[in-house]
Length: 414
Image 1 (tube, rainbow, N blue to C red):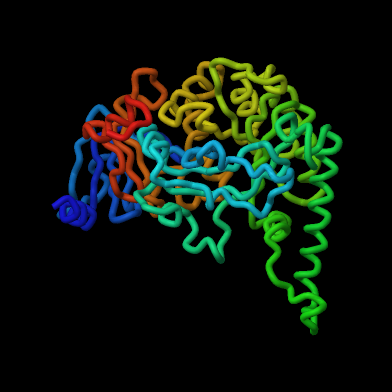
Image 2 (cartoon, rainbow, N blue to C red; image 1 turned 45 degrees about the vertical axis):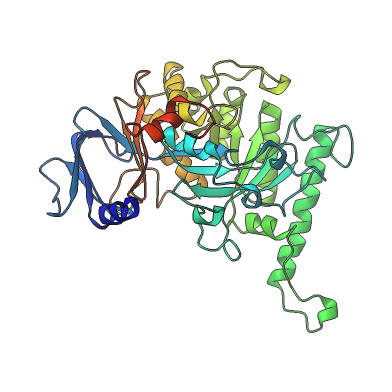
């Protein structure tokens, strides 16, 4: 009966009406209407201006607010602690977080309870090159392939590349660097090898198998994709000098990394603006924990916004709880960011940093029907997530006891 009711519901268009709609790419709509047909948005506008299909299921959301599905550019949900790093060496471009994600983990349910619909699942920052990230849509699924943005992970690029500098990748043993100088040198050497690989791939094919058949290279091909502009680098960096190094390496090898954390962004805001950098920040209300993050400042988001630097926010879950992602934006506003900029930092800016802005990040006709229904204004401390929709399917409903447990409880399944 449950399967039957779901199939019937999904066959008819769904209309959310009489809510305040925040499209992000346009001004808020006080008495808004959103029409979802299957996985896509087919209508957005003010009540009375949008045609509503006769067979539509209509949901009256008077007094509530609707925002795009939230985009978390940096998360570790679905990864067990032991699977977040590959500790056999500092340079791990061949490994992929796809191979370690458990999509049945309760952590994904908690994220949906926080209104998150798109996540960038990253390896940790113990390594200079931590491995390939995975872009997931938090739809229902049994295995990771059900949630990937790409259709076939064997033939398509399904995420970015995690890199890191600063103190995290400096280890006292093995081949890991002992200094920032050593770290930068190892990364440069790896990219030089990738450049050679790229040139060979672009050259004439070898006639003899003994001379090389141009087959796959698990270690270097992800870096070639970076050099070709096909794979986005997500760069963990904190201190101002480390930020400068990350940008310098990008300049040397012709790629523009998305900078993550950027704790001392406020010190180098002019440099970031000059480079047209994109910064994904974590907002914490209890700073500290390690030396390079001592001078983290919640005002960075506002300062970057004022200088025209693109800003997104992330959870780094489990560092901050995915269910409190909206709260991060509220804290950014308290520290001087505009409300519009903070909401964009949770949605469209993050989508742009993942290269997914054509599908998600705003409420527009033709985009995926990823939506969050809120009890009140998006950045109010009193507001909570009522519903989360992914591609036209409701995946969280606070009024459902089975779902509300994820919003208010812990890790144990109900």
